[in-house]
Image (cartoon, rainbow, N blue to C red; front, side, top):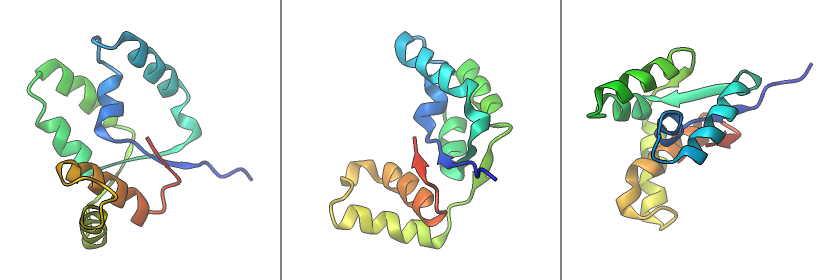
Length: 115
């Protein structure tokens, strides 16, 4: 039995599906999306919140629809603590705290691939 790899998508991947400013990246992301069922795909509360904060109504709607079939992970105390450690020890610069949180969520949930 072949086990599907677990992947975590951060908000930029969901956004890239619809970003006409970068047609080449949008095309690659759409091609990737066509194969997404090969993976066990996760996003987190952080991704959902970032999408909800998107000022462009049409983009927000499109990104929200893209999330419908994806599993959502909650931010827990372990992920919060680990993300602070990433920043504290310089693995992630302080201005990228949310990125540290994405990495930590993927790590504590044993996700093999972070996109």
